[in-house]
Length: 393
Ligand SMILES: NC(=O)c1ccc[n+]([C@@H]2O[C@H](COP(=O)([O-])OP(=O)(O)OC[C@H]3O[C@@H](n4cnc5c(N)ncnc54)[C@H](O)[C@@H]3O)[C@@H](O)[C@H]2O)c1
Ligand SMILES: [Fe+2]
Image 1 (cartoon, rainbow, N blue to C red):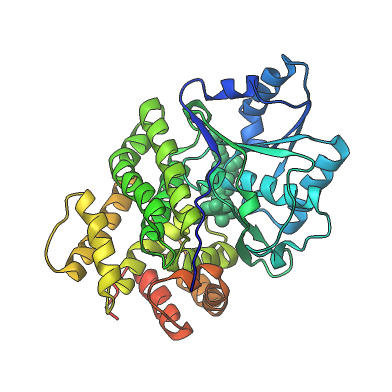
Image 2 (cartoon, protein in one colour):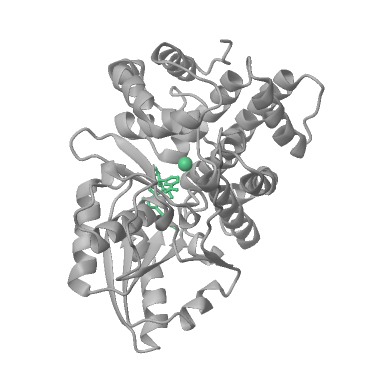
């Protein structure tokens, strides 16, 4: 069988003066897609003013919400159409960036059904507009991926899909745009980045390019995430985490996420827990699950563990220690390690369990997990996650 792989990333500009790239892009009408919190910080105005100095026309649409719904995306697409944008500039966390990416699809191709979009569809994007992403969280890496995660209005289910054309044209990484992010979201979004880099390294679609990104990102996250949570104004830590999250996006965006994302998307859908909190909580349990009966996967975890100084001949034992190190990191930064720690009561958990399992089983990331699983095991994993028990099956 003949195989062909792509490694796609946007042009990435990082550092103190990353926004200077806005002085050379060619266009006339930019719509800024953001949310009310980020807009309130004046970040959209900063970008708009830069473009207006060059006689561009700009508009700001700040209707994005956490875990965007299809209906939110349609509103953003309508705003793009009304304004006649030739550039779309997303300023925000993953929710804003995914809103902009998905709305861009509908702006260019109004008939596309987002939940039916596949990696193989030819969309013909960029006939009307190009996309710049300026992340304000150091987490999702969505500014570098071809992925979107959108919530179905009726069922509340978050669905993830990829299409190569969705890779943004430009990603601008400016640490001053992240500095306002509070402690809890700094921790949770950092855990999302760690989950991307670890899952990108063990996914069945892993490849040498994505591996290179993962290895650097894992080192940077263990080093810089505690510092960025400890001192929210530490610009060096913010910049390193922004770069690490983008590298992690380049990794999983070109390999794929796995079981922790299936469990986590479902937690976001059913319990409305933040994405990074959810996938981060699931991560150590999935390491413990995947490393059993799968020497290849255990040796991959062991390679990652080696980067943070955990070594040994028995790869399963080393993988289990990696899971422990992830839990220690979460303890240090205050990211919940169990449902109980996240404040989910037994009643709420029991009430949601059926749907948690159902949605996790439907999630696309499950396909790329190195160990096959079923609804019985997933239910058991959630039970262990409620109590904070180490996986032993
Ligand atoms: N497309 C992808 O590749 C990809 C990857 C991972 C996650 N996601 C999706 O991204 C979403 C999560 O994104 P997120 O974790 O970045 O969180 P988010 O975008 O939902 O933002 C979380 C909160 O932080 C606020 N915020 C953002 N930046 C801020 C700043 N600088 N200062 C103060 N407040 C700020 C937001 O207003 C929001 O209230 C989820 O829907 C998830 O499924 C997408
Ligand atoms: Fe994620």
